[in-house]
Length: 99
Ligand SMILES: [Zn+2]
Image 1 (cartoon, rainbow, N blue to C red):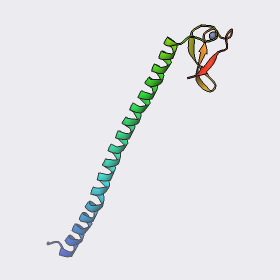
Image 2: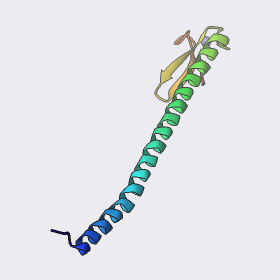
Image 3: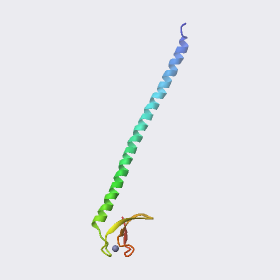
Image 4: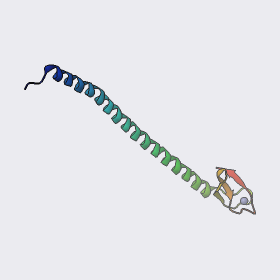
């Protein structure tokens, strides 16, 4: 039994319409996935850089500076408003400064 040519034709049209919609959709999804991966990789590196820069800054500060009031060592402390430099002789010396 031969297939009805009209049905075959309709089937082809549906298939090509699906392909026309699906192929770009898959391409877009692929591109979005690649873009997201790229973005997050970049972001990760930025965060890493930021953290290591801050660490380097802290270490440099600790290594090179001493308290201008008492001559004691300056150390990095964490407070309510974030990190700051404070004197190691606290509470005797209350010298602080921003990082
Ligand atoms: Zn001090």
